[in-house]
Length: 616
Image (cartoon, rainbow, N blue to C red; front, top):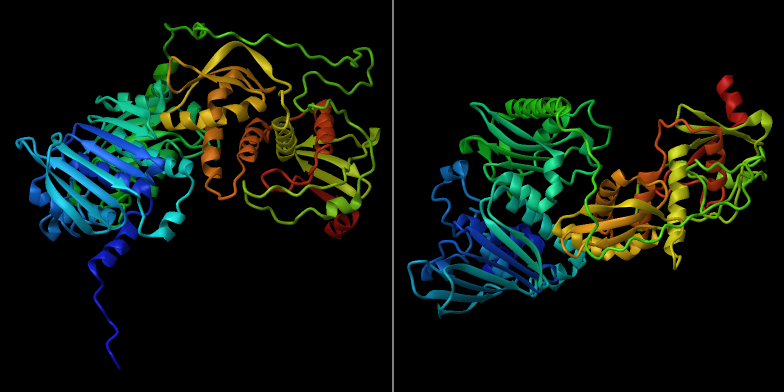
């Protein structure tokens, strides 16, 4: 039998390594920016085109490289960071494996220009798919500029699996944030498709967080500081009243490196027990310092997963430090009596002209008609002004209700039921609210239990979807004072994409020309409080980012579902009889009243046969 084992050529081995190190443009950005930081740069420029498909360029003013190092850095396992195996357990730099540049060069067209500060001339190296095309002297600024063009040009299958530019750039943006937050003493700028997204000056931790997440971030955070023989912890944790529904603003850094660690993240969240609602998450930015010999960062190619020798002690210390910060600063806030609250009467933006208020009323309403079902304070009145009505329930309709709840899926539209059933209510069987969660009423076939939150989600969802089809949105309410909402540079780009969609939903929203990242809201859909606007938009952005990850996601559906879920009446709210009547009428006017837009059952019918079985 002939030999079957062969040594792989270097080009093939590098492409295989690239699959671990560079799986998308964001991975290349991470490696290149971290190299610039290790080179001692105090100013770094990141230039991206087409979310990294066409170009990723990193320019720094670091130490630069010699002629031989400029060529050798593209070889596998070539590194200046470690010299012996023991060095792996005393890592103080970002990159150290010596695979990054070799992996990138294996799947892209790379041009490197570098010059040491003491030299007059630099070196230019051009590599395509591991083949060195040229190396020659050149004139360039001190430091290093590396341009990665046409990523995965020689691996079409990998390039075809890249997602749309919005998604790929969101990954780049997240990688950049992780690096920029912890390296607050380095100035950064980011350009995407010719637009300046970030222009961050060197400063302190608080300044860097505010410049990335908006100036309002400082008002939502408490400082944390704790030092022991085992670990030093400092940074910021979010105030309990500013929790989020997603884990978007949670950042842990160990010895200057962003990490993911379930136990340490859980330590922070444990400190908020009984302080925040279920399924909400606090923000935190924690900078942890431990002895490098007591941490292993070499367990994952991306180096974001680590192991600690003193994990249980770290858990207890971080939880204690977080609880101390929440208790100390929250108490201080409550006891500050010399700063009374005042109205925010900041002037409107220059040139801003508010819309003329509109008054709507029901011409058929008669306050002396006690049989009128219109209730001006109800949150369940539909856009069409429908009122409760009595028609026979269709037995076969309820038989189509699925027995299992499906997971939330943005990509597939919900089934539409052609027939519109309703509930026959009489004086003897008036619907009522049970456990501040379910509406209970009777049908010919039995007793029906309706989840009020899911029912209201379905009503609002269909109303918002209908509004999307209107040329002129209906039902918007003018605000007495315009509200400013601030977003990060990447979120600002998404908000610009969503402005027209939000207008059709009933928001009057405009970007503020004099301030990058600020939008002015002058009108909202009904029942949206001014104080909710920032959190509503933040959650819509989070849902949109998560939703577009699905290949066939519908942006209209994502935004309508997000808004409906946030505005729906929550479990624990005891509804009045008139509100229950309006909810039932609006629910059975929906196209699909038995399933929530999230794919869960809205109602359950207990028939006579089941009841008899239970009572046997």
